[in-house]
Image 1 (cartoon, rainbow, N blue to C red):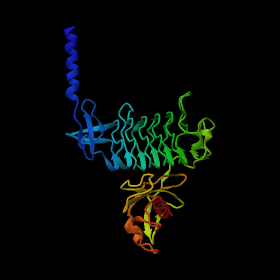
Image 2: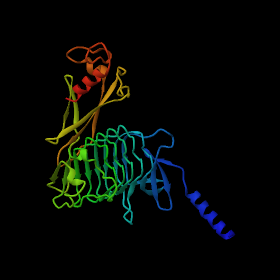
Image 3: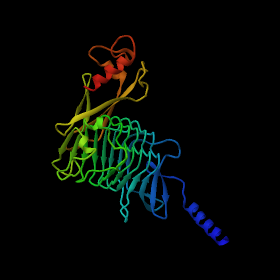
Image 4: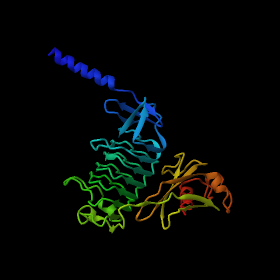
Amino acid sequence: MKKSIFSFLLAFMSLVANAQDPVKVGDYWYTVEDNHNTATLVANPTGGGYSGNVVINATIDYGGKTYRVSEIGYRAFCGTDILKVTINGQLDDKGSGLRINNHAFSYCKSLSSVTIGEGVDYIFGFAFYACDNLATVVVGDDVNYIYDQAFQNCPSLTQVVLGKNVWYIGASAFFGCGELKDFYCLGTGLPTYYWGSRPFFEDNIVKGATLHVQPSSTFVNSDPWIKFGKIETMASATLEKCATPTIKYENGTVSFVCDTEGVNFNSKVEYVNKSFNNSSTFSAPSTFIVKVVAVKNGYLPSDAADKEFDLPSYVGVQSTGNFEQGDVNRDGKVNVADHVKLTNVMNK
């Protein structure tokens, strides 16, 4: 008995000795595991969160060693002000890759695009839950599983591209994605779900969307795929990416230009200072960001472009005169009508 307890204590002490506090490498914080030469990207322990464009590489170098990034940890980026996400992993000798854990990117209100490259195999539940401005998602060929509610309640999501080896999608994974327009499946077999569980789409959403499939795809005539409003066969198994659009401002009008011909633009106007939130008034002067993604059938969506505008500067050069303190429609009040007018003008 004493020997058993002693052995247990030794094992426990070994685990404690191997545990390490988070370390900062580049822009992100990681916990490293020397026994397996792996690292997990974790939330910023200083409480500062993360922001801007996120690029996660397959490996990090720390303390003279190279570690394979095996996980993006629970709530690592949750609720932060990140804008775009690009993730590249690396498969180990057993075929396991980087895993995106539960709530890793949930509630990221400014996130507009997600590109998951090689070496990522699992997207766990709620990973991108309630990302209000997420418009485009590209999932790489090494991803096998997308779990329950992974992209639920992303109301701006318009285009999804699934890699060749996604074969399982969990319940409600794309519920609450009311703007979904194009869903590309690059594999020859369409993903499935466990019978008896909730489907991953809502019927009233996919009936207005187009499913793009390979010529040799199977199960097109089965649930839930048959419920798409339109099913189109792709000409190629690989998709070219739309060029990143340019945002131009001239003579009081915001316009978009793209080197890829025949694209459509998904645009949005946001308030930087968060002063307007479905209320009857908003503080002026305010700063706005215009965001846009170029999309085209048969192409991957472009990277998101954004440009910042200051309301006084914007309205001050209008040919119709100067709008005082945010009174865009010049009715003597700064209220929801000004927000609507400004948004309509900037989305022309």
